[in-house]
Length: 116
Length: 114
Image (cartoon, rainbow over all chains, first blue to last red; front, side, top):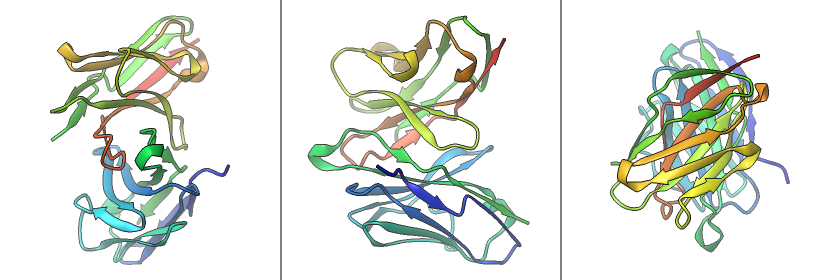
C-alpha cells in the first residue's frame, strides 16, 4: 500500500506569496492531521479532520493559514500571504478511527517550506 | 492539558552500548503512549505503543519501553545500539478516542559513535 503522500517535498518562495501544500492520506483512513515542525517549537498540531470535516483547528497560527479536505483522498494546507517565520517542515498524517483504531499515526515525508 | 517532556535534547552513545531515552508525560487519565523515530529528511515512523496491559512493550528494531504510572514515565530502551539507530526520537501521548490526536515531546537526537 502507498503511504501518505505529500507534495511538494521542497518549496522555496518569497514573502507575500501564496503557498499550497498537498496531502493524499492512506486509503481507508478516517482521520487526517497537519503538523508543523520547527527547531524552536518542535512538532505542533495545526488542524485535524475526521471524515473530511475539520474537528480542531485551534493550532492554526493565524488567519493566513487555512486547510481544506474536499474529499477523503485529498487535503490542502494554504498559507496566504506567506512570511519568513512560516519556514518549517509541514507533515501530513492519517489514521484509522473507530473499531479499526490502532492508535498509530502514519506520516508523510513532509514538505519543507522556506520563505525568503 | 496533556504534555510530554523529553529531558535530553541530545544523547551520544557508542555503537554496541545500551541506550535509554527518557520521557515523562502529564495526562489526567490512562494515557496512550507512543515512541516514534525520525531519520533525516524523513517522516516519523512508529517504534512502539502502549495502550494497556503489560507495562513493558516491545517494538521494532529491537526497542522496548516501560510504562511506569507512578513516575509518569515511558522510557525507551535498547540493549545494544547500532550505527543505523542514529536519528531523532519522539515520545507522544494521545487520548486514544479523539482520532489519535497526539501531543509530542521535543525530541531527543541520538548520535552513535563508532
